[in-house]
Length: 394
Image 1 (cartoon, helix red, strand yellow):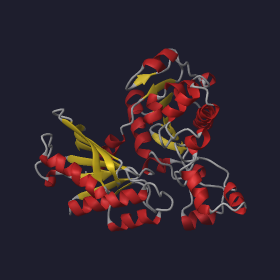
Image 2 (tube, one colour):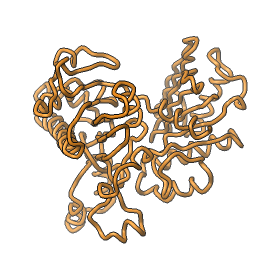
Image 3 (cartoon, rainbow, N blue to C red):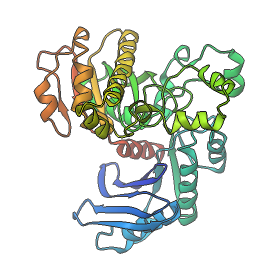
Image 4 (tube, rainbow, N blue to C red):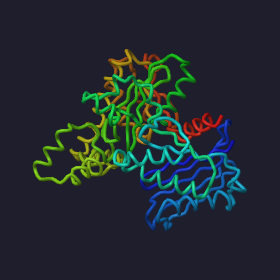
């Protein structure tokens, strides 16, 4: 079975073509800066190694980006398919749809449900709706499957999902903690299950431009730092994360327009907001190393927020067997990992500073005698989606 996975960002498109159930990657590609004339497109035939990278491409919209990918997939030296009819399905890392929280065929009804939550996920749902629409037009009759980011978190007990608000708001409007990054946390759970079997306690830290912490028991999500929207939890690159809801009416009373408040929370907050330097932790860390106090403050605040969630989830789990770092920051920032792990000795973590500095790919950063095993595991959300689509089609 051939499954194409499409991961849509606010200005990017990522693809991986899998042969299932072998889980063989046949091709992968990435388009960056969609909507600009300096877009970047890269493609690799995983079997032959043939690759191409094109810069300064005029890719005004998702339709153009998708057509470029399909053209290379079919017609280049690195082609993988002779005809699009060979595809069995296209899977998407969709985010949120009202009333649909698992893995679903992307029917008109499901698409309408995604539109219902455009205001809850404004940076994610509109791009996905556009990209799915393009694939439906280009591949009429081909099966489209959405693997919603909320799916993995359906096992969280209701007592941990509910906000302390009028219960009628949950019944009428569905106000609850949904949780996101399900594809990533589910993949980490699968990886740990291969080592630990069916019984274990795990905290997964997906740290990147968007970040979340997830408590996992025996392969199932039991709590997560994300809430109703993606504007919650730990600080993100641009988004504030957790904040007091009454800041909003206070700023309104001070004369600040709602649009400016939301822009500050969503685009000018997070690591960028505190540091004033960048939304990229690499640049913030460099500035901190050079003595920039606000940059140092941003790193400290970021690590402290992660520590708080780890501590809370340790208490809920009643102990811990594994701590895992994944995502762009989790995989690449030895400083963040060191700051967090060195503060967790009381939880049974014996941190190995040398392993932490030198490791690449999947590696351990805990000592041999550490009661809690600590790993860095590269994210592979696309494989998790391919597995979900394959199961859906059985």
